[in-house]
Image (cartoon, rainbow, N blue to C red; front, top):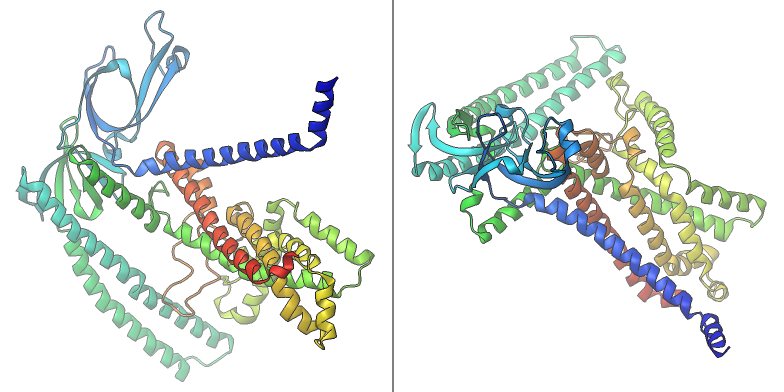
Length: 557
């Protein structure tokens, strides 16, 4: 009886629910941290320069072959599964171990990944001379360096070939970077200028200006100037390309075949088996930086993801600028000015229901209303000369940001209303009693005290918008954007351009890639980077909110 009484007292005290809540929070934290840890380990380990193995592989009834590559994965599989792939184990053996080997050399073997059965591996070595070459096409190359050539003539071989190769590779990459800069900057400006002249000419035609008149002659003169500039740049580019294509290397793969690789097709090369731990660590950070700052290659399965990072951050920032004032104004009107009645209650119900609408519905709305209706009308009014090619009448960064602003505005409205409700009525009355108008009270007293709640709404909006993919697929996101939304061409910020997004990049690489094994670590790395960006943006907003809270502590009373 006494035990029952003590248990009842314990339950009535509320301590079991405290412990239950604490346990739930702890489990949630462990799951979140575990998930992020899994993503980080599986993604970031991809950039480590793994050792390259050379092994002798003997299949039953077949001749032995030499294989070279990186060990990527290892698993134990049942005999029935192996039998489906044509591999039959000895009688009585139910399982077998196999290794996923990244053999690279896609131009030689067709596929750069291969499963091999561990019992059939006869010998394994790690020669120090094996090198890993990252190429701009055809993926990685694994093999031996034979010699270095300049215009077909051997300039270095043997032990001296590697140092000569690294020197000429640095020169080649410098030339490649210079060529890309000229093509994107100077030639990009010329192409933009020629397009503007074409539009001006079309505008004159629409205005029925007589051909051969002064405006036409001015356009033709400017076109000739631009063509002359392009001819000079073309000569410079031809010289750079000639210098870029000057050097080649001769390489040898595991089966003894040799081939020439142009230096222009090589990004970097290193010998992981001959590297110390410190050298591997430096190479690891170099690979990670190239992933963050580079552009994608080979159907997004190689290279970097900087355009996707840029597009994600830019879209979130524009969305934040659009959603915050709209949501705050709507909340202030509903709370401070609107007569509280059936209509206002109906509006609040509608706002709360909007938060539960599937995101793809917003994408359809954005495509129909923003892109086709508003964007098409803008093109008809201001960009008629460009038609039928759309300017704002096609999916772009602006419409994507507006669509996500509409998607997240209920969160901002609700959070702002809650913040306004927490401000004591006495503060408003005191301000009015001192002679301030309602607008002045709202602007100088109420809104600053409600700023932490506004920031809370913004934090929730950013967290949701950064991870949305479905609506973006309809209003602006693309697999590969030809150029960024910001460049050196006026007006410098091009809101009409399509953009890349980390969320869509994860979907594309994970489910649309022709090379699944190569794409898998990039999915983890990109997902980790997306989570990291969301965390950084939220931490910045939380820091601002906490500072505002400290400034206006009266709002907590």
